[in-house]
Image (tube, rainbow, N blue to C red; front, side):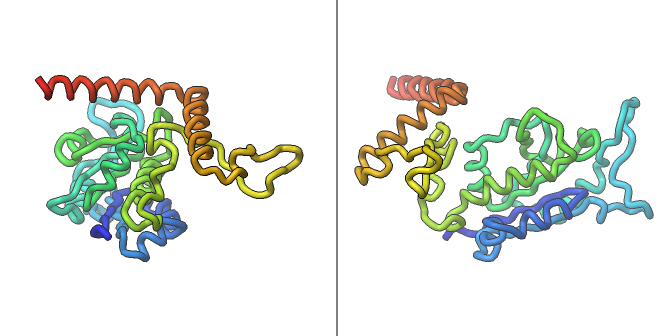
Length: 244
């Protein structure tokens, strides 16, 4: 099994993540030694009696923003030479399965969670290596976004889910939504499981699943097909240029 992934989360609200990290797949991954978690509170690196981690923005405006001193100190207390510091911010690049796979190849991730009206810009320009957004909506703070990223990344690490190909058939792993799934009983309230799934013909089942995944993606997320077509065109273009 590959070496353990170290994930540090810099957040003003470590309690929001403590329970989450101690449950289900994440707990099992930590027990296996596939991942190590550490929660770091910037308030522990303040120097005033009130443990002030935020202040009013220069130039005026609503709300408060996170101060650079405690955030820099918190990150530098855990940052290694091979680590990547990621800001959880709505201004970041969209989080997708491909980004999760990219982050899963790292050895050390430090996720910095925002709060209030955001970060002092010096945190963004002089401390962070990457910025990620999980969607275009407003959350209470970045710890919630960090939880989503952690879950998506950790499950891709070798040995976490057991079989080496355990994540290969999941939604988005191949650019399509997942095909319909059924289990026992074969009939429930007049609703039957498709006959092909009961046939024992594995080739027919695989063809049915592929067709259903494509149909469901076309109906519900046609943007995924457009993106896949664009990626394919880019690949063909690169190959053409390389062969010249």
